[in-house]
Image (cartoon, rainbow, N blue to C red; front, side):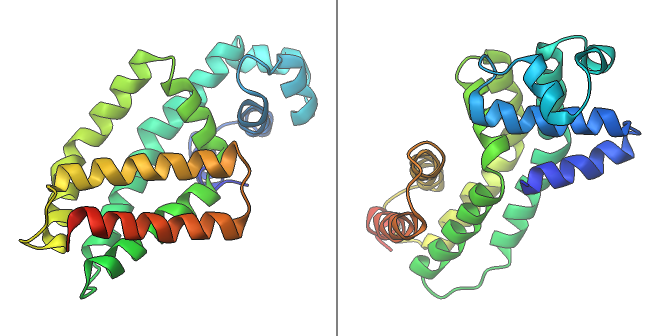
Amino acid sequence: MDQIVRDFITLSENKAMTPAQKKVLQAAIQLFAAQGFAGTSTAAIAQTAGVSQGTIFKYYDNKERLLEVILDLVIDNLLPKYSDDFINAVEKQDQQSFADFMNFVLVNRYDFIVQNGQVLTILFSELMIDDQLVNQIRDLLLPQWPRLTALFEKKAGKTAQLSGDEMVHLLISQLLLLFLQKERLKESEPILKQRLAVIQQLMVRAVGS
């Protein structure tokens, strides 16, 4: 089960959701990630959750509303916490070299990808077609961006050939490719670990530290 889903369940308990609601949400996350939103029927969600379709419609009206609830809970409640946790962890690092710093960042983000593949698959799929969702994510991350880019500039040192903004953009692009290798191409763990090492080398060479 994804870490986001476990946190999601805890959050749903705080929001006084019924056991049936939680089962439906967990089943929807599993099926939306595996089959896509369009390829998932309410009948399949009901069967996986062990409830009737009527139960789904009672709480969520339709499949579209169910997706909205999942995305809203993740974006509004969980992603802010995860971004804060990541930046706080980066700030605590005291590695002597930029290569060691990048190793920490890459392992940290790879673990996050491994632990949350299903929810990230849903999120990225919707980002490709939903402009409103793109704006939500942008508004969420924008306040943290200067803090994160400043950290990268500090770790890279004054001789760095890239700005903090360029470093973070390059890192994100490489992590997205890594995510696709894992979730869509189903590459093996050894290949993914090799890819991590290549990304580390690429970042170090690009930055010039």
